[in-house]
Image (tube, helix red, strand yellow):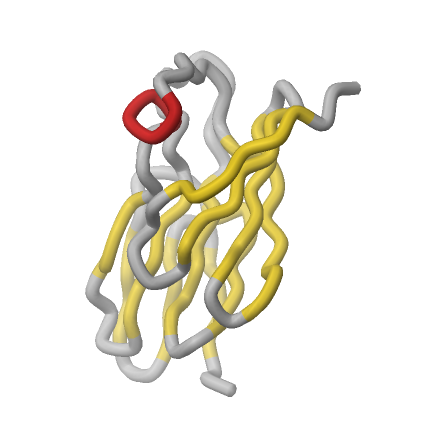
Length: 116
């Protein structure tokens, strides 16, 4: 496993540092990719807050928009992330929508409403 740390809005690993606009809420390392979930402050309109960074510190993708994938307007950011397997990560939005994301591409591949 790769050595890495989070410092506010920075992912620091293997001799590189990637700085994001917002504080990092959570990061995971899977399949030689760092998955980074940003903490979005209240009042921000940003919603696609999951990124993938490769081992060279390059941002590979920002998660596909829900509107593009499923023609659903989304107005809340993701608040949770769980690794399903080496190819899939699950993210949950503030309003209880759960999506599966393909780690290789950042594409949304499935959706489900978990409700509250």
